[in-house]
Each structure stands twice: as C-alpha cells, then as structure tokens.
Image 1 (spheres, rainbow, N blue to C red):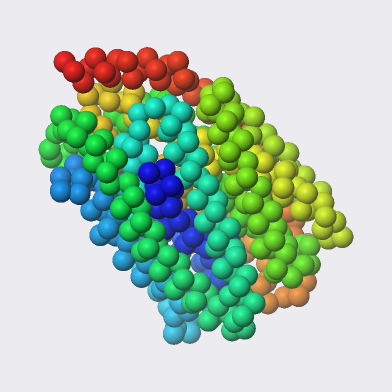
Image 2 (cartoon, rainbow, N blue to C red):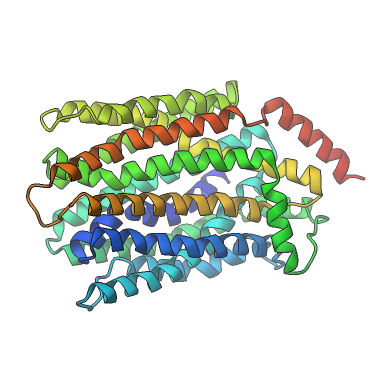
Length: 448
C-alpha cells in the first residue's frame, strides 16, 4: 500500500520538477519571453490557484461516489493534467511578446486547475490511509522519496533528451510528452494499489458528514485558518518550499552564467542534491521515529542553510567545492520534503476532535497551494530580478549586477527563508504524546 501511494507522487513530481528546473529558462531562452513576463505567467496561474485549490479541496471532502471522495478527482483530472503538461513545453506560433505571453497564461490556468484536481486529492489520501503517528511519517517519507525521485527522473530524462535531440524546441516538446504519459500510468497504479485500504478508512469515517451549502466554504476556510497548529505548518512549508524552489530556479543560471560550465553540470549538480536527499530520507525517518517530526526538521534544515550560505563563496574555478555544498544541502533538504506533509495529518485529527468533521481536502489544499505558489513566487521574483539587473539570455558575458543577483538568489535568500521555517517548526504544538492524546479522545468521540 505504501509503495502504491508513493508511486502516485511521480504523476505530479516529474512535471513539477521539469517546471522548477527548466520552465523559466525555457520561457526566456527557447520561447523568447523576456524574464519579467516569463515570471508573470506562472504568478498569474498561481493567483488562480488561490481560488481553485480550496474549492477543489472543499468539493472533494464532500464528494460521494462508489469510488469514495478522492479517486473520482484523481481519475477525472489525470488526462487533462497530462495534456496541459505536454502543451506547456510547446512554443506557440506567435511572433509578439504579447501573443506568446497570452498563450502561456491561458494554458497555465487550465494546467494548474487540472494539476490541483489530481494532486490535492492524492495528497489528502495520506491523512486517511493511517491514523498512526509513525506510520504516517513512513507513508509521507515514501511519498517524499518518490517526490525527490521524480526530480531525479526528470533530470535524467532531460539529460537523455538533450543528449540525443539537438533542436531546443523538440527537446522540450519531447520532455512534455514523456511526463504526460508517465502521469496517466502513475495515477492509475496509485488508485489500484491503495483502493482497499482507502475504502476501509472511508467506512471508518462514514458517520462524519459536513454540512451542505456553498456558504459554508467561507466559514470552513475561516475555521481551518483559526487552527494555530495549522498556521505553524503553513508558515513552515511556505518558507522551506520557497527556499528549495528559488535555489532550483537559479541553478541553471548559477552553473552556466556564473560558473561558466556546460549544461550537463547543472543536471549533475541537481542530481548531487537530490540523490543525497533521497538517500537521507531513511535516516530522517528513523530520527523522526526516535524523537519527533519537529526534531528531525530542526536538525536537518540547518544543514541546508549552511550549504546555501556557502554557495555565495564559490568561484568559477571551484567546481569540486560547488558539488560538495550540493551534497551537504541534500542532507538537510530531505526533511523539507517529508516533515511538513507528515505533520498535517495530525493537524487534521486535531480538527476532527474540535469540530467532529474530517476535512483533509480543505487542509491539504492549503499546502498544495503553497507548494505551487512557492514555485511561482520563486520564478516570478527570480525573473524580475534578472530582468532588472540586465540579464541577457543571448549574451556570452552577463552584467556584474546580474551575476550578483544570481549568487544572492541561489544562496543567502533561500537560507534566510529556511531560518523562518525553523521559527515556525519550533512553535509547532503537536508532538508524539499530544497526538496520542488526540487519538484517544477521538476514539471516545467516535463511539458516542
């Protein structure tokens, strides 16, 4: 069951990783958008997500079907998600900046909505497949392993395609086709492999029914944001995920423009970070079992901070030092993928104790939105700063201001964001003992 659940993450992880690593570069260098417009495309789509994420989460909580609450959304959204993931990497036949910009804006609205329809119900499954504190950590750890593995797979796909196809437009179009096909296969495997356990969980919670009526969406949103533990998880995740995404968006520019290395080094550097992170998931899962989820992140995040701060010291002749810092970053990055999502099911249990309702979809919609908003904000800020500092994708040598912007964006800014995540996790109130008390109280409440 855990393996089948984890496999489902690849449906979103591969296209999301391709976007994180390549979309800004693709928009500016291949499609021909200026950096400011390229960043704005993603930001507009994420503003739309501010509406469709909570709406889809709320609707999936209320869905009644023979397949349960989550599976109809996953199965219904996988084909539109695959199609839009493919079209995202197609250069439109427009000659003007306005035409290209409009094409990608419209496409992004459909792409982000279909992505939400699949990814949000899939993510919410974690809170329903198990009530156990440690099993949930393992379940989310498996999801995180496939999330990081999806990033590695995306990079390997890119390396193979870039090595075999010379034309840039064909390169990215082929990557889109591959990620689209993978999404359909992985969602299907996930649904088939988790159906039995999920259906048992649905029967256990069959007595919990939220009130009907659209007006309650706004009251439900106010209610979940009133949850103090939930706000801590949101703050933690926003800071940590934006840190990861700013670094990922800047990595091609850092390797190419600052270090003066061919693009193969970009993929290898990303693999150094991601490969170390996926190996460390087992270690951090053990740490979380021995101590707590909060302790694991407070130990891991500082390692990533040290590595990110070190990147600003790297000079073009220090390739080995660059890779060393990439490995150190990977040691801590693993906790950023795993811990916030492992904390949220415990918050959902607390909410059920307080309200008598299971609202996984609504809670996870906030984290899925932040996941996408973090990527959009990272790309928007990066694009704007590159534009303001005079970055020219066609130039052999970049202005000194642009090079400084790249170095600051890949290191000190993400490290500062991680410092914010440590503040939020320090204040997170649900540890192992508190969660056990919540489950005991829920047992009494459910059998009244």
